[in-house]
Length: 214
Image (cartoon, rainbow, N blue to C red; front, side, top):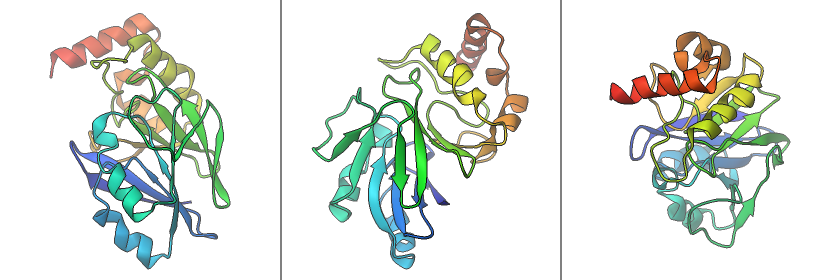
């Protein structure tokens, strides 16, 4: 699987273009940046945009969805069944651990509520990468300050799902908030107290300290 990331959007958002090198079938993860950033790459590589994958429906992550659908009208929108946005009829809702084919490659859906009720991550098990949206960043987790967020759910999503993945899995988050755009799970655990908590209570303390320092 080839991966191209672009930073832009509302707040250092990261959008991703993925494609199968054999079939040229491709997907966009989070249409948070303008289409022009990806058009040259898509055209140069003769890519076929089949899917637009949504990690969650906070406005900044779907900001340019209509523009992508205008250019790629046959693309299927993939999101969680509890999505909190008015999406069109091209939506395919996916369940926890459902497999999404991208040509000869595939991604596994992992439902990770907490930052938002419809948060999902996309795990490339073969190529050891995961696209985490706002559930996990470099150095910290997402926040739980909006409606439909929940710190207990976030703790369970991070500790019972994401941190159970192989430690050499590379994290590709929804924002560039760290010193690097991507990082391995192993290095993120070593880097941050957010990922070394022994309990929900300890996690809440870490989160409270983070929020008080903002």
